[in-house]
Image (cartoon, rainbow, N blue to C red):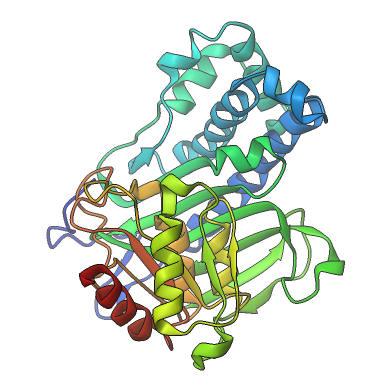
Length: 346
């Protein structure tokens, strides 16, 4: 991960006088790649047994196949279009090569998603593609929310773009989230995307009309809705509950897997996503937050760490300078931070 932009202005990204300007091809590539990756993930689930007990007997194989296949199709697109952009991604091919039959399934599902013949050597090259050192940096999580994926609940395919240590754009594919959180009858499968300074948008994952999304304007604590992580190790639910009580947030709390929570805040479905960790020394992986943080910010919200500091994505694969994450609609951000300080100092 590059530390700042070193004063360099890459022609494909930087406008001379007006600051960062996104090459429109980048979002087109990212959206298409996320759609293809979602196809791989849903293909894995379609082939897996419906019964939870039968699924459990497969162990991690379904998520292993989906993880590698998803990353392969994303980096096939990114590497082909922008070979010199830096990439920070979760998986590497070394472990896949030891998987045997699972590797064969990844090849087959990737070929189906891309609509052409694919070999194992192609797959390895795509999964391990890390590009050069040009900006932006692509921060990729091929499946965020692995346990949600295995439960056939919420998971996301996340592609974030970072420039100078800041997330500037992101795409989230959320195959099981409502197309419109205010109208669940419209079905599921939504693609969220946004560019800081240009706005955030949503569209059906499999194609359809694009709509602009924005964070909720709610500022009365009594109606504020809070999102937390399903896994206790990801969010310290006792601390989240204490903050809710201290701040008087009365709109209810829902626990959801993955960066889908960022999409929900950006779309005005909730006002707060709070992610403290139950191990004080833990630092978040950048691919778990880059896409979502950019989208919430683009939608008019605010994202910081638990101390109110901006997230610094220039410190390698982890947010070494930050402790936890708070994402809100902006209107209640200071209220949540104050409640955090009170609870943690008690």
